[in-house]
Image 1 (tube, rainbow, N blue to C red):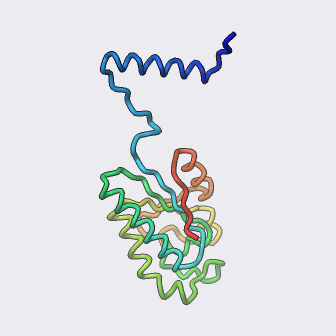
Image 2: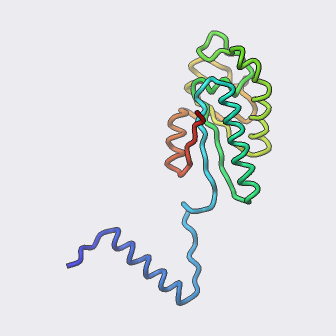
Image 3: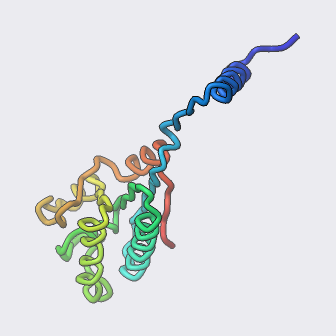
Length: 170
């Protein structure tokens, strides 16, 4: 005796739809999951400005590829902990994230590249508000376009549940 399960019922229904489509020429619409939008979240929780520069290069290469291939994309960077260094010109003195020589040397270049990715390429910038509030950084000191999210790690987890690929540059 055949046991009916949700999986077997779905498989039978799908087979029936395919057979009807084959006879009528009906087009099966794509599901919401396969909507041809590339979704990627980059996690920036580190202090190294060279590593951040490498991440910016990776993102630029990715969005350039998507644009050349006419692929819609939703690319985001979620900044947590030390990543806050990259979304403000404040030196963050007296905090665990304070500016060092490497950051001072690369700040302007990295900031310009980040702003270009955001304003020209549409990359979303999201900062963990827990990190910002723990060091009492005025939101007005953030770069234009940086959105606040209640928790960076929760945001990353939520985005992954929505089908975003997770990338962290090492």
